[in-house]
Image (cartoon, rainbow, N blue to C red):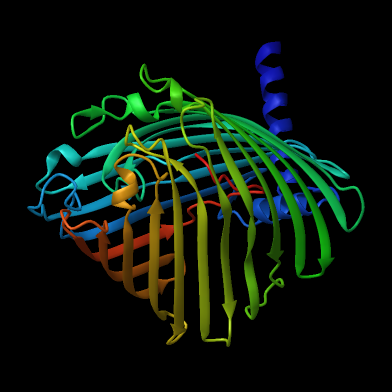
Length: 434
């Protein structure tokens, strides 16, 4: 009897706490990432006591692909109908005022009508704990991804990739205008039994990556934040014939972030960084890489109806080819969007990219790939929590060599989101070598 009474009292206490917690203002300290965390918690789609919950149904790239394999496996195109359906979910649980638990799961099914071997189940799980203290923001967590996706700009076909990572972030708000952040992450990549041209990708790409970042931020104004970023990476390859790919990377960058006004539409959003990166290979017989690297994603509302976007990335990627080890990937993308009404937006995007290899062996004559893509989109918002995009994309790839055929691929279809897909804290660092 006493046990039942104790359970009843405990249940009543829990119920009172849940009701009271719904009205608590969770303090997020005096750091700018803590402020972003507060917005993420309070912006969740649903509330259940202290719980903040996001959930959605997504339908991505539902339509017709003119060539599933982008002519990588031969000159005969393989057209098919496809879609990717997912149900991403996120749970945020503030534990008191200074700790927030963040859990997310994104199961997805990748469907192809005729090329049944391309069908796959994907899943990405992530867990993080945020500590928004008075002048300190800390975060620890990790994730697991088991996803069949288009691997890279070098090999644009579906490949199964498994990625496990653990990491942490510590930021100290030294003054109102200055903050210093330290970041560490360890990630492991595994490509299983995937093959290309008779070679297992695991032999070339399975690796463990350690990344360390130190960043100094300066709040230059209400809407701009400057930063300087020093990066170090260590790459250990697991394949039996890939020990000579072990490498270290060093990078130094300067950047700026544009902070949008709360509730405002006009002005700049996003940011960019630019600097220098060096990739040192452990094998002294192989050529090291170095050069300008960086990334940008900046959008601007020119008027209440017209906006433009610019995206840029340039950095080193590890190659699937045995003689190349790495390549330097460069991408430019620009877009223009015009709001036709509150529910309709018309946009056009164009992107150009290239990949360049070390000037050794056969890759000196091949010179890398050149590619471009044009996309027209119509974005519709038929309901409050629904967004749909109708789009068409035409892509073209060519390697400047007379004996290789130009590859062309088009896709026409739609993407749809219904509900609240969840929010993530903006990344404080950029990973330019993977």
